Length: 450
Image (cartoon, rainbow, N blue to C red; front, side):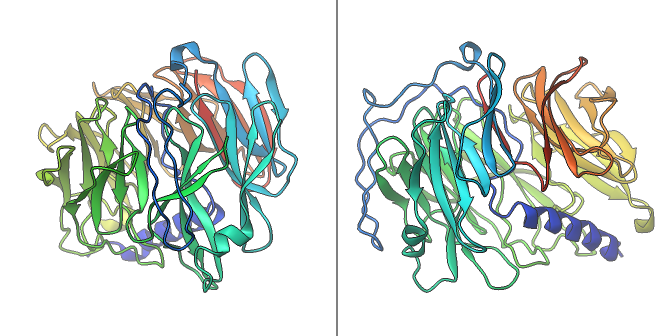
């Protein structure tokens, strides 16, 4: 029998973290992609419930994002309920004045920051502000969000992200429940932060969690049972390229798969947990490749992995390697093996064994990865050649790591009490630079450039 009480305890701890971040954009550690392709064509998508339209500017009108290697690093974060922005040349400065800000995201060119403001205990507003603090403007009011489902207790944005190369903001919504749980509408909405034009790209039930392709031309749309593709202008919908069984979470939220795009945007790969990760029979996690041609996904392998709510199996950014945990030995010992394999689960090797272990994620070079061991939050840097080394030797309790490039990363260190957070910029093997000290709940950070 598996050690169900211990796994469920770990799961409850993760739920506590999720509750603190319920209004955050997608928190999967990401790097800032090199976005070269701009949105083309013009779309007018009617929103049945509001009658609003969404317009995609043609190529000549879409603002271009400077190449990342020519663009200064911008780190946006929340401090004392306000938006702050740090750059190497200007340091940190407050750029919003609204207060009660709970989430944010920054455009690829670093010129606009969109954020959510808590209007009362259950309602939020969506705002934007320019990087210099000018033109603080309302994007979505409480009334506009409530009109999306008048019968709901409240409607709030869930995932927010700028369309690559533009100042158009994509977001989906969720219903605020009067009890525990998270219920997404599985939509995809659009607001232009420059013109304030609003629209619905994918109506409720037709969207979901979304992932832009590296070239900015396509969107992977994920629901709890399928993965589809659509162009950023709403055309060329390729429905249900991968259907998968709904995954039990043993809680009130639903599991959404996390596909990873190939660097050339030609395909995706994804690891799908079994329907019941706590099944004593240990059913496999299946590995899939999804082409962008519209052909169905193809299963390329399978693994026996630890329950996904401890640490999910993770594909490297180049899709060539897979990282996952496997519980071994007496369940009471809480012992795990860290496995590294080829994309199809072949050439599997055990990198490390410890009690316990959790995965943080891959570095953008696809040859290094980060994990935690022994119940601490001191990160270890691993490599596909099998070498291991402390990533931040003097860190005490690292919460998040955001890779700027293969050498630099941003991280949050909670210290001994986790009441004061240090936001730092570090170089692998080098000293860290303090960006700011933040107090209160888990800080929210986004960045671009570098």
